[in-house]
Image (cartoon, one colour):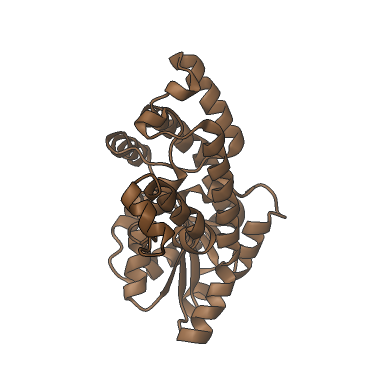
Amino acid sequence: MIYETKAEWNDAAHKRVVLFGMSGLGKTRISSILRDGGWFHYSVDYRIGTRYMGEAIADNFKREAMKVPLLRELLLTDSVRIASNITFDNLAPLSTYLGKPGDPAQGGLPFDEYRRRQAQHREAEIAALIDTPHFVDRALDLYGYRNFVCDSGGSICEVVNPESRADPVLSVLSRHLLLVWIEGSEAHTADLIRRFDRAPKPMYYRPEFLLEAWNAYLSESGRMPGAVDPDAFVRWTYARALAHRQPRYAAMAANWGLKVAADDVARVQTPEDFGALIGEALDKRASRAA
């Protein structure tokens, strides 16, 4: 790790961290607090949705617009522009493009198309994560930001191998930033599941996990692929996905960084609070290692 002790962290002229963990536990909230306190905020999902999948997202909007005669005529004569308005706080264009598999009449995608978009996301997420050191340098050289936070997506653990010391993504990140896992409790997991059940959203899955889950759901539900309720499938899959991700997050923290409790993160109100929390976590890790 680039900071091994509390003293190294406190004395560092440049503080650089990657926040990772389940979506909904505070990564973006903390990143916003740090940004307001003078840190550079790099959002991996924003980078995915603009640099790497922006064209595919916009083309999908245009494809739908071409089905409307008035919009078709305006598009063919370059009379209107259709573009994604993705922001750090509104990633809906990206999640809408990623979609959910199932019955087209219920907004679902054919499974092969869904898998194609999943593969696009995987490639984009890896590229956006590997871009992080470039933005560390860019933030300092262009704008003078000495401190940097990478706000990663919840699926970071799906595109790395935390058990491999040669993992290309984690190797790059760990050379430049401190990886910090925001660890949720069982109560947090239960709350996330309840929230997801109320408003199911698209998400990325490892290919092997997705295929296994899809086949299991078809077998259990007795549905044909084209008759699957997209929301029902992602609801059924969500808790399984969280359970699948938990040990991967834990291995990332154990082998490449450290962890902080989500409850402690929730109490952070200032960059100074965050700095103190990281210092304490480094002390705890050093004590365990001794």
